[in-house]
Image (tube, rainbow, N blue to C red; front, side):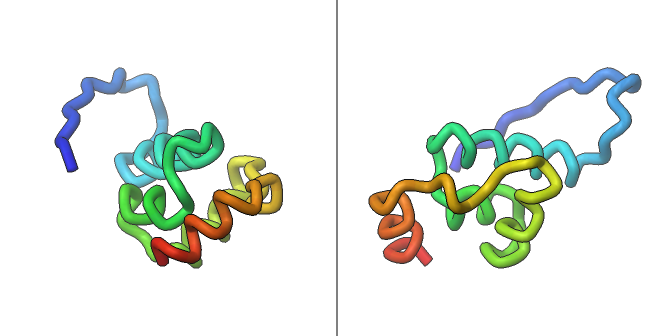
Length: 75
C-alpha cells in the first residue's frame, strides 16, 4: 500500500477518520475497491464499513454478483 499525504484546508470540518472513510466510500462506490479492501483502507472491519456506507447514501445492494463474489473471496 502506498502513502498519500494531503493538505486539507482548515475550513473542511472533518476529522482524519471521516476523511479516510469518505475516500474509502467513494472508491467502493466507484467499484475501484471491494468492500473488504475499502474497509482495510479505512482501518475498520468490513462489517463496520458496510454499516457506515448508509451514512454516505451508498447501498451495498447495488453491487454486481461478480463484485459480491470478489468480496466474499477477499473476506
